[in-house]
Length: 357
Image (cartoon, rainbow, N blue to C red; front, side, top):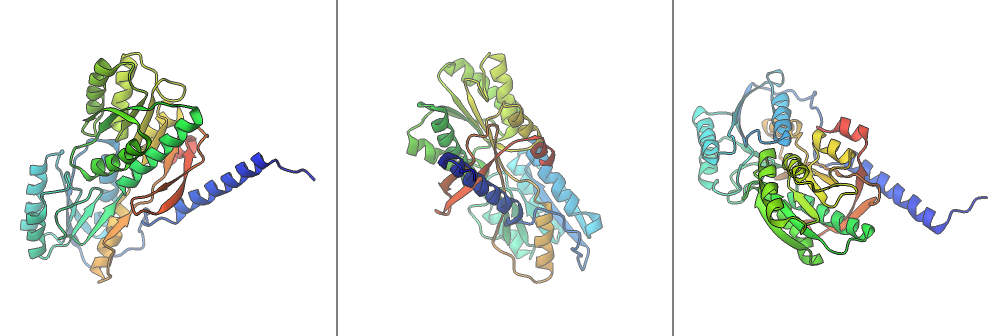
């Protein structure tokens, strides 16, 4: 009988753990994230959706998911306002929805504060408000929130970088950070989570600037960084994929290597199709998913409210952490709830790219 070595046994058990955790994340998620073909509304509904804008692949995927689910075929007339990252336009759009007497209001808030007066008007008009993606911090006049735990995304990225640096023997971490819109809950959460590791590990953060979640913004900020800090950094954290694309364009122009085997580690967030292609080819080292396919869950929440079913105050989307190299099978960290969790790191292959949004 063949006896496995202790190392092989450890590796075998690790693979079992990763398989089990992957199955849990795929099938044991908090949100449905699938089609709701069986949902039939009892009346025709008019829903107003004040969307942030169209600044990224992620945002477009979210918009398309909501449009597909809240459709005429499902008994809903959807009025979508693309606010183009203008908070004044978004506030006016919601006031207009209230004036029109829509049945439900859907908001992906550009910023997390300044909402109390407007949401109070919606409550006075007896219009339920569903908040998706980003959070609202200064009002409780909405029925539920659906989205991602951004702090956990930042914490997971920090734990991955810690483990990756240990495996690679990297002793010094010098970070440049390109954030998303300042004041958005996505930026607040990812920054808060990742910066805990900066503090715990004593990493050096050289600079942090807002790239506005756009490819153009990522390139603009990285051009500034390359001019000022060339040769001083070995990690770039980009708070979404589109900014990462602009960052890589800038690095190419400045002759700086990155990704697997390069001089600079790139960490990104979103894990859209184009982002995972960059992980697959080794340009991005790790990409932490933010799941935009929220439409089916929005439809389910509206259906439950229509049928008098109590909905939870929060619904968190299931998400996956991706990497280019098969050297960190899983990470263990304390999440935003203070719970110790172990989660798999999925190595990107063609199937992962095909399945991405």
